Image 1 (cartoon, rainbow, N blue to C red):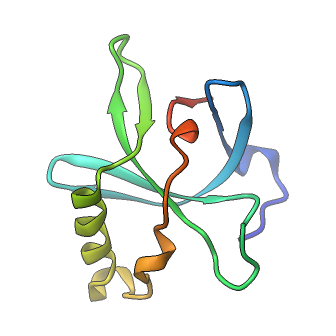
Image 2 (cartoon, rainbow, N blue to C red):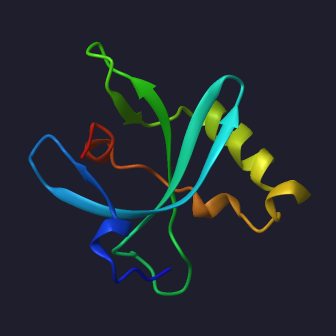
Length: 107
């Protein structure tokens, strides 16, 4: 997925101030939670597209934040994505390990 327009990017900032740019693939609702699937601008592999899943939560100030879902949540999301309603083209290895530094702030 290629984006040329700056407004298409979601920029996440870690605790060290490092910025990471993502494009939004989709938003899912599952068991009263909302999740986003984001595609990082910089892919680790040229052979397959990497995707990151975050749960949308609210911090103590009422601001929306993105947090890393636990393993059970990821399993349920993967099951949902594999259904015919979502195209069924996701594989287990597309949701690899998450870098905990990338789940704190959204600009």
